[in-house]
Image (cartoon, rainbow, N blue to C red; front, side):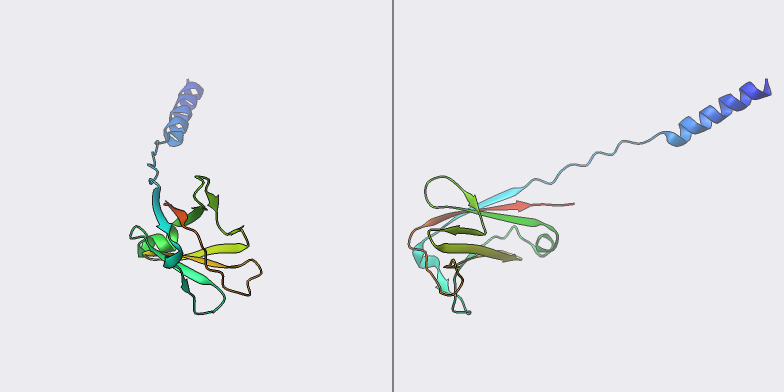
Length: 131
């Protein structure tokens, strides 16, 4: 009888210890911001080798700039978006971001001379929130 009682008690303790609680994590929604950069929006950057075009993005707060992710894609008016960094038509595109701002840069593909884009560029900025 003691053996059966011991087995039942041990089984009860094992089931009690191994029970788990389900934890549901609600994912943070991603945010997409669109902008169009005209040829006149580009200004010569201080390095003299590239042009820059800043885009104000209030959704990038200080905390988001530290822990979130930013993905930038550009379209040349054909409805097809290509993620940057990208070289298109001899122009190398790159970007940086900080709180409240994304800046797109354009320069020659070899990085030696500034090249100002001559056509409008559609920009799609996707903010990927993390936990």
